[in-house]
Image (cartoon, rainbow, N blue to C red; front, side, top):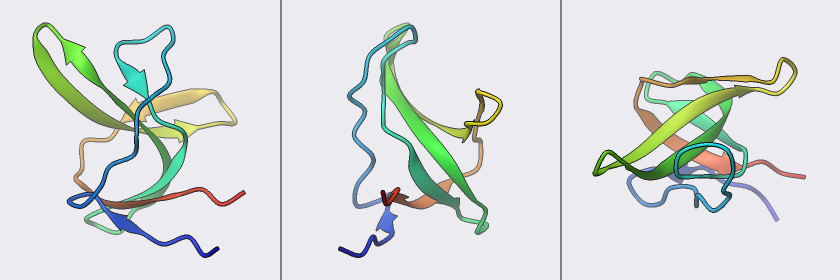
Length: 81
């Protein structure tokens, strides 16, 4: 099965994992900004202080770090295993 890019205006990754963070998180995905920058990412969604959020984070698996992406994400795909 070939992986294909999914436009964020059509579908977003499903956030289903819970843990020691606000809301739920998705599995790792490949993401691309509207500028063409690609990265391994993860999404978080939920409610905080009465407001809904859906945030993208770039993930650095080697250093166990992540940071908020402020650019618009245009598309994403599941990571093939």
